[in-house]
Every structure is written in C-alpha cells, then in structure tokens.
Length: 234
Image (cartoon, rainbow, N blue to C red; front, side):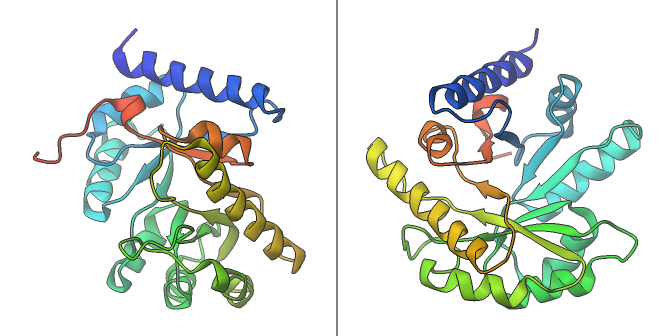
C-alpha cells in the first residue's frame, strides 16, 4: 500500500476509535481531506482508496485540479469543499464549482453565493465560519453575532445553511481545546433553537481532532496527516 493509503486508513481508524471513546455513534464524523498545495495525482490516489470529500483553500489551484481530474477520470464524482477566505470577486466560480463552502462569515458573501449558484445545481451547502477565539488575524464572524447572521441568511435561495466552522487558537492544552469546540457547539444549539436545523460542526484538525470529536464535531479537516508535509515553495 502507498503512503497516502496507509495514512488515510490510519486517520480513519483514529476517528473511529475516538468516536467509540467518547460514545459517539460509529461513522458520525466525516473526514474532509484537505488537499491544498497537493496535486491532482495525490487526490486521485486518496480517491482510489475510498476518500470522496476534499477541501481546498486556493480557488485557482482548486479549479485547475478539478479540470484535470474531470479530464482524466470523468467517471469519478468527488465532493469539493471550499474552506479558505472568500473575496467578493471570487464568489461566482466558488458558487459554480463547489458542493460546500465552510468559510462564509458575512451576509454579503452569502447573498452573492445564493445569487450566483446555478439553478441547475443542487443547493450549495454552507457553514458559517466563527472566530471562536477572537483572534485579529483570523477570519470569521464574532461569536456574539453568529445567531443573527444565521437568521438573516437561512432563507436565501439556492444555498443551504448546514452548520458552523471554526479554527480555534492553537494550544496543546486539551481542556482549552475542548472549551473552544464546546463554545462552537453551544452556538450551533442556539441557532437550532431559533428553528434553523443544523447538522454540521466542521471543527478539528490533526492537532486537536480528539477534542473536537469529544465536543460533537461531525467533520474533521485533515491534510498533512494524509498527504504528508506541504511544500509552499512549489
């Protein structure tokens, strides 16, 4: 077996074991393979071993890989998730090519995605990105504003609000990790209490996936744990 297939299986085994450890239902946590900076061949290799959902941060890079994969493997149906910051002038190609967007943090972006999603495609699944740790360097709606934002965009056509996403401030303290993820889960519960049905908490990466699963994550985002170290100099 290849390095990618071995890594993929190890990550899946870890997720399933963590579900069991924290009394989560089996297969209640999905794996999103973060393929930014890795080529189409790496995605195809992971797909050959059962991985179907891939996360991309950089629009142009993602579109190039989508085109190459569609050309070489037209029978392959992958699920593409945009997880990077969104500029207003990039919403149209995101709306036209992705299945999920995890990084919506303001009404303007949601409206543009709604208006630009082709009517021939299924509704675009979106998560609101929350700046759960209040870091100035990070994107995301403030926790105190997320319920109001959800209420404003939940009825927009051609998009479906599925849940929340966050990238908490890095820490090796498991208690602090869990506190941040618990806060995000509680925000999701507040939104659901307003009559908006949410089913997704996109939280947890390689360094904190156990804490995220313990606090209710339904989707963890893993990149280097599957594909290896990134080379940003390419």
